View 1: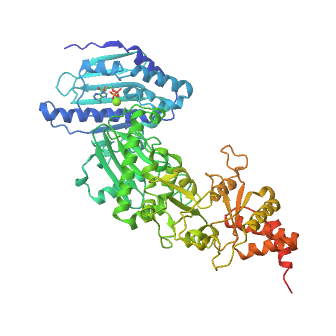
View 2: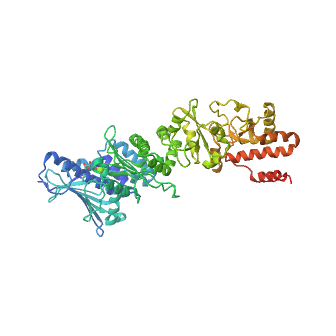
View 3: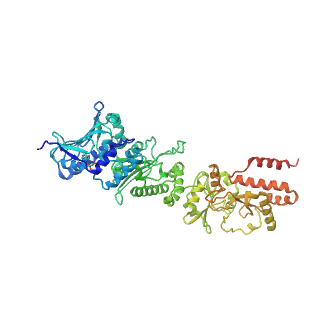
Length: 626
Ligand code: ADP
Ligand code: MG
């Protein structure tokens, strides 16, 4: 047996990594603990696997665990595992070189990050070598499971390391770190406990810090569904979601091919964004074999699913991936697609199963699904089946799906209609639904500001166009009533066509640039007038929102126009009176025309000049006969 100490040089690439690690400052150097603990866990896993087939004899009784000890005075940190251990040859291969596949590219990326911003390096897992972020020297004492002679590896990270035989070791590996002066916090128990809880809670072996087990929560996502109780699920939810409520839905699934995925996701009960708490951080953490690689991951789910809590674990992901590269990693994109589709499928099933429960979800989190429709083309089809709106066919307060609307459509109707308004009552008493009511055509009520954007983005459902009832070019399905063309509701006559034409022309002159056109209406029943949009995309509600956001819709790059069309009702007694007044008292008739326009604008939810309107209104009131 030789007792000599051998000094060896690190491989060139390893030296580069060490150089970057040692000569940079870190904001996230906590991760070196994660790296060493996950190496220890890997070594234990390997031993467990091996003992299934090999029946090892040496130290067979030693329990599988990780022990972390520290000395706040001597400033040392020791991480011991009872895993597979390493022979002298393995020591040299594993800790003298970098064996990562694609390590060249990895080092390039790492060096690039170091140049840009040293704090970025902390996001890279640089494996074992990350120990040198905090270590003056690292000593590795290890003995292989086969019982062969133990060895000690030692280095200060500067170009070379030594390997020498070491007596009296048990199976496994002990890593002794002599801490740098500015890294003394890692010699403190509570720092280590905090880091283990953050990154290594779900390691499947006991992790003891100073003899006390720190990882007490089990990674239940790896178990099969049938073995997990509701209580266990709920406890887990509270842990990962930092929550106090109970989840309303959960999705737990595993897949092996084409990707290894274990996902456990929860829908919380409350929406904190609704409660004025500001924008939420994503609530799903990304793991690779139970080791955290991205907390509150922005990459693993689309942004509009930020209300979900839980974990996604994929062993296909490399541990040492940076957060930047997660965002444009093709594998992560695939995971995201699979998980998102699974979630949307679950919600569709739940909606079928229990409408009441689904509606609770919809009221709380529907806004996120709407955001999904407007921001993410990829899932529009799935999302469209989950949307719910009030409708002329639903009772107040209850909602309908687009599919239900389509199922109710009468023959001859090929489009889906909707109209926005501040409330059901306001819509039902307004001009836009008059003809719908009369002809018994269903119309959806979009009561939320975002709704018209959602339906406009969607464009169609089940091959049927989605159209806002304030569109100028709307053509309702042919009427079956014969006398609708010439008579008003009370059977009174409409204005003669020639009178209609000249009245419209005159009103256009009076209103000037405020309207693009004034036309006789075929859609009004009771109201004298209504405002319509000739722009096929914008609705009045969308325009109002853009206006309140300070966006100028007049010279908007999307070509949105604030130019309105006005339709007047040739059967309305007010319109008929105005036509008559025009020949007798021009000025008064003008005031009436302008007032009708303002009233229609108000009914469209659009902005008018209140001062001008009030003054005009007083002038009109002055005309009261005494
Ligand atoms: P990775 O874990 O990605 O392979 P590391 O740099 O973290 O890269 O570790 C390099 C190698 O060193 C590991 O693959 C493993 O073979 C060996 N190793 C590291 N730590 C231990 C340990 N505690 N016990 C046994 N082998 C270890
Ligand atoms: Mg490792």
